[in-house]
Image 1: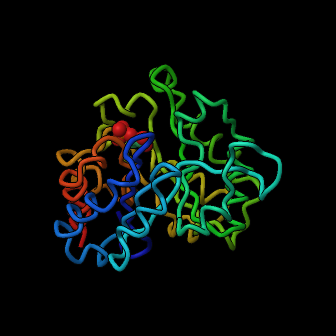
Image 2: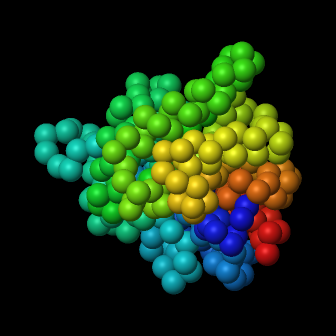
Amino acid sequence: MNIKYRQTIIAGNWKMNTLASGAKSYANALCPLIPGFYAWCNVVICAPFTSIHAVVHAFKGNKVSAGAQNMSEHKSGAYTGEVSGEQLRDIGAEYVIIGHSERRQLYGETDESVNSKILAALEVPLHPILCVGESLEERESGVTTNIVSAQIKNALASVPDSEISRVVVAYEPIWAIGTGKTASPEDAQDTCREIRAVLANLYDAELAQRISILYGGSMNEKNAAELLAQPDIDGGLVGGASLNPTAFAEIINAAKGGL
Ligand code: PEP
């Protein structure tokens, strides 16, 4: 990470786990383990829609932000079952994960729909956490850079210079999500550096230096320090390990290494 230029972010993705009624006990367990964390990183909990409000209240006064895991590309209207960015903001969310591979694979999200959601999130405003990453087959055939570059370019179409530093990018190799397999720190760094180069091409080198790029994919309390020590990895998007406040606290504290 490069704390001189950009914000370190540790974001938990609770996926479809947890109940609203458990938010307070989670916060009570986590907060004492991360004293003064805001000096070195932003901590975000991306909870299921039904728990976001409870997370906001459970962490009130503790500088932990809440986020969602998806949102509608539409502002309002006849979209049964959808949730808009404005509705998320209204209950206190500040971040929203967009284009997670589980949504791309299981719910048919495309680069185009991801782009619409990124633009809608920025308008609210929410900080979008844009997820990109390659499959195992793509990595093995040596096309990781092409895949990830295309995802970034398509997702950020029409995002102006004035808004780009509010976008967070999460590099999440699909084969590492929820599998216990982690990209090596060197491979994760290489791809994050390439992502920054793509951003520098799309915008400029100075703006690219200000964008936080997270690594996600089986990050845990054991491997976090080495991954977070890489110069182009500015934090983590953490699934499974974020459900355990002790493990999540160790990851947050590992992000202090660069200070
Ligand atoms: C994720 O869901 O974004 C993720 C990285 O999951 P896990 O940490 O469980 O691999």
